Length: 247
Ligand SMILES: Nc1ncnc2c1ncn2[C@@H]1O[C@H](COP(=O)(O)OP(=O)(O)O)[C@@H](O)[C@H]1O
Ligand SMILES: [Mg+2]
Image (cartoon, rainbow, N blue to C red; front, top):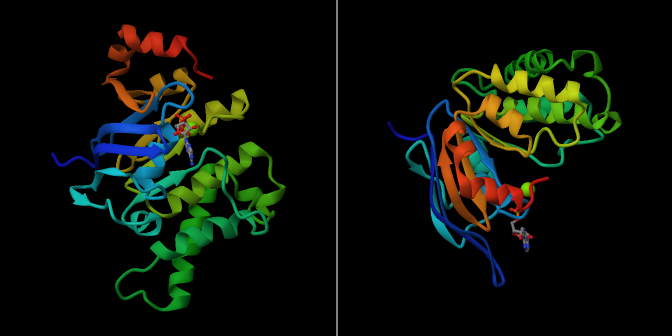
């Protein structure tokens, strides 16, 4: 089967530091894939390279078999790569609903539905359905800047899904969330349709093991291991890398 995403030999250098050094990654359609590793391992850099916001010095990225290496973030987003950032990135002066609407508009165009008002209505339906799904209906009219961290995280997830991604990249979505919010997040990600592949960077290993079928461990810009959660748990080098410092 053609992988949903494959990355080959990804290398990113900052001066003499190789943030990523020949990393390969393969995500199958519908896969829940976790990316773990100590701070500074290169996890965020890899997500940046996959999303197109950082250009790798070397390597290729293929989405569903098509080479997207030279495409920027907007073009990759149109082709189905969605991104949830380490710090929730929302438009603070727009309302919660407007944030989701802005993200839904570019994907609300269908053949024969080109008219701006029809497009807007389609985007509004998408936005309202997503707000209901993430449980933000009641605060949809509030400026996003007024929300607490956990609610911003929910907005960003709705924004990420509004672009109808085939692959959702999440960078430490549980960071800063309360126990109740982490439980919500885990359940939400678990019940995402399988049509959406997931690449989850997360320090909370309970969440990783509960959600993901495949785990890749990065350390010092290199892949240390890839396998099932059971395989990764049993792997000596992985335990060592973790003992050296996971947050
Ligand atoms: N823009 C940058 N300039 C210089 N060094 C960077 C930059 N971005 C990341 N790095 C370095 O690259 C390495 C990997 O960083 P990062 O991908 O953020 O790691 P992680 O997300 O796994 O904690 C770190 O050593 C970090 O300091
Ligand atoms: Mg990071």
